[in-house]
Amino acid sequence: MPLIKINGLAYEFDTLSDEAKGHLRYLAFIDAELEQLAMRINLLKISRDQIGQRLDEALLRQSVAQSPPEAAQKPPGSSS
Image (tube, rainbow, N blue to C red; front, side):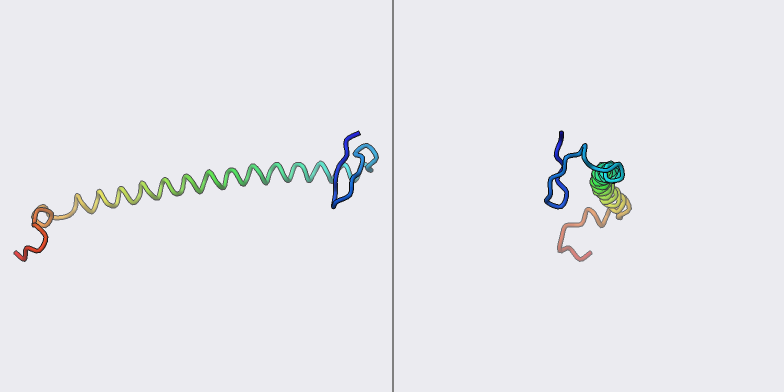
C-alpha cells in the first residue's frame, strides 16, 4: 500500500476515507494546474522581453530613418 505524507504524518492511501482521497485528488489537480500556469507565465515573460526588444529595434530604425541626412553626416563638434 502506498504511503502518503500529510503534514509530516504518514498515512496508507487505502485506509483514507473517500472524502480524504477526494481532497488529495483535488490537491494533485491544483498542483498540476499551478505548474502549468507557472510555465505559461514564464513563457509569456520571455515572449514579452522578446517583443520589447523588437520594439526597441523598430524605434531605433525609425529614429535613424527620420533624422535629416545632413545632421547624420556632420562630424561631431562641427557647428555649421
